[in-house]
Image 1 (cartoon, helix red, strand yellow):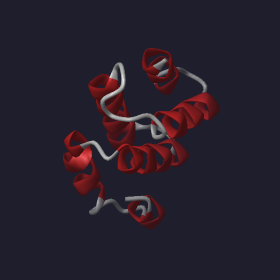
Image 2: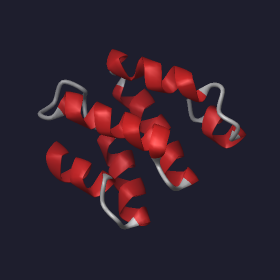
Image 3: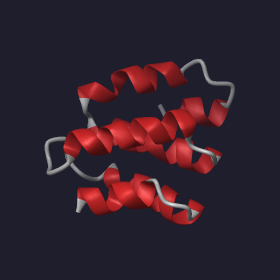
Length: 88
């Protein structure tokens, strides 16, 4: 399940990428594929081409409560996008 969502997160459809990020936020970090999902969300947060994807990834990382996400979330606190900062 996580692998499928991670694949969608890295796909070409912007709407599916955003929805996959939201869905990954609902899964526990210790579920199957947990570390890979956290890493994929962190990449989407740092490198995502759409603001909506970056915001969804920020929210999802917070929802997962995975300590491994802390560096990615802390890095966003200095982002230029105030809406993105609000999701952290």
